[in-house]
Image 1 (tube, rainbow, N blue to C red):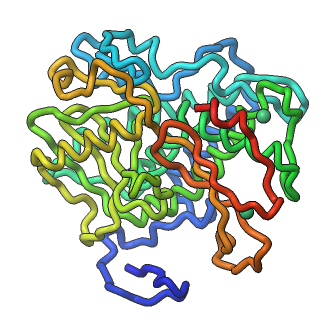
Image 2 (image 1 turned 180 degrees about the horizontal axis):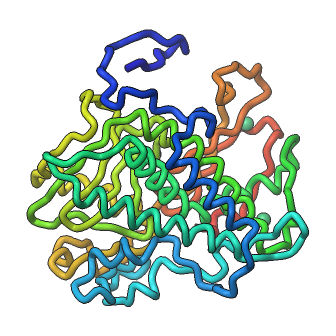
Image 3 (image 1 turned 90 degrees about the vertical axis):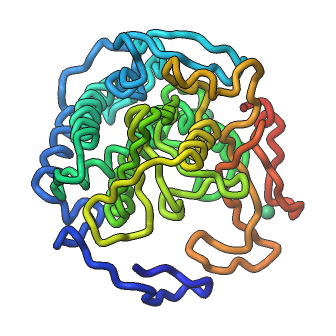
Length: 371
Ligand SMILES: [Zn+2]
Ligand SMILES: [Zn+2]
């Protein structure tokens, strides 16, 4: 395992046996194995498929939500905007109108991306079935290990929350008239963000494959069924109120049923899967992470209701945070009075903007109300 020291040079810390006997890196798609390759080809095939009339798009698959349901139809929800507990149908949660409606290269709006995500939903079901069946005496193939990582990374970004955060960021940037900020479509276009979000999902999918597959896969079981899910089901813990990126996060959590959570950590054990039993402190920690990470809705079983902070609104959730920095993302120093605006996600009740007074930034008062 290598990690970059503060001076930016890399040094070897520890060598762990690679349990896969192959290098789990996709190199942005160049080193894809056969299964993953077929999967991506199938997704991209939908780009040429006939359009669909479906207008309501789930961003968390129903198969996932149903694991918290006792009748296969309804789940308990905590609306953190109001504090209200309510039983809702899985058809009616984590759904948005025209979430994936985009403008194609021909300038026509279409819903083919939704068809594409239909294939992703199928893959979520397949991967979750494999992960739910995994036991100490069973095995997971390298292909499925990789697909699990990519599927979770895609789910992490494919939410109303990442759309909302993108909207906040967009609102600020479009007022800056900054060099290098070019909008692919007119601002007035309601589908503009859909296009940007969808495109970034595909970029992230490639990058995530590399991040996720170099991590340790852990399966956490809880006999008491204390794992929650939410409208943002793949989570990393906020550190000092700031959410680390996929790369920097110590652990990436994906509860796949009340009794089982999947985790990707950077503590390599040299084994394909590490099985763990969730103690009360771990169950409490994962609950806290899911609560902080949700956008609006926590999804729970009836038994889990008494552990939820119901009755009053929870005003804080993920928001963008803008700060001036003297360093480029690459680490390169920027001479003052120049600066670089660093965008992070933080846990707060509104976007947080704290920038220098060098005359480089325009104030965007409107942003405060975009929570
Ligand atoms: Zn806009
Ligand atoms: Zn500045």
